[in-house]
Amino acid sequence: MSKPRVPFNQSGIVEIARVAKVSPMTVSRAFSGSAPVAAKTRARIMSVAEELGYRPNLHARALRGGRTQSIGLLISMNSTPSILKVLRNITISARKEEYVIYISDHLGDVASAEQSLIEYLERHVDGVIFQGSERLLSKKVLSLLAEFPAVTVITSEPADLPFSHVVQDRTAAIREVVDHFYASGRRRIRYLANVEFNERKVAAFLQQLESHGLSDGEKSILNMNSVSDSDCSAFVEALNSHFPDGRPDMDALHCSCDEAAIIAMSWLNSRGIRVPDDIAVVGFNNITIAEYQAVPLASVDRREDEMIDVVLQMLYSRFKDPGIPASRVELPMKFIWRESAGS
Image (tube, rainbow, N blue to C red; front, top):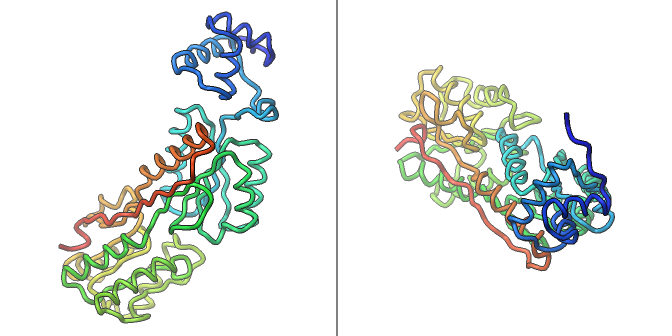
């Protein structure tokens, strides 16, 4: 049976202070975060509070200008297959620092992003992690973000922002893939993607082809028609459409995601085309099953574990010192060679 809760009032603070053998002021500081408290002392206070069943009223604390030990995460849940892993790891890391995570999907829509930020302001979250394209950073979104004590933004390219932000550059890895294909003697290099959802990837791919004098224009792009970049059947339809005779005019294929690459390898294998001997294949996102294919799939790693560490440290640093200048960290994604890419 759980112990009754100690009321959130001065008498509760005094009782905790008596048992923990510290001053009531130290207890108040430990819970509010209004001033530094030694780690051992804070741990002892929290342990006593737990034994006594003490739970602070975080909303009341927020109204008095204190912290709520909460972080609002605003992202797209339809971004990559690993998004759930990212959310879980952020939650685990935040829990270690005694923060709770609120999660909202901006749906790739400015109005949805604005509404979620308004709701986070009403919840008095201590900080926000915002991940999305520059298109979502409207004047109102930027204005709302500025109202939070701490903000970290995750973008795919550098941006002129007043907040700390992490740049997950995708284009460097795409250039690496093209360079690898070219260095291994491949000259008919193609890219399989939904162009609408991968404009920057496609642009980087074409630019790198041109740098090697391999400009085939639209022939280099195998576009798929789909409302989603994760529609597996659309990748098969795209391959069938571009190569109706089953004899693809290419010797290397880069795909916008690993699912497309795995489907492409199966499609090629069913037509007696060998990977990588006849056609080298590289995916994107480095999902867990990539390396366990019959021919291990080369891919592009998003460096998400590093990203999580950097993003949270930016936020925690702002919590400790609100006056520190905004910073920017670039984490270019990396080409991961495996057998499917050819030697």
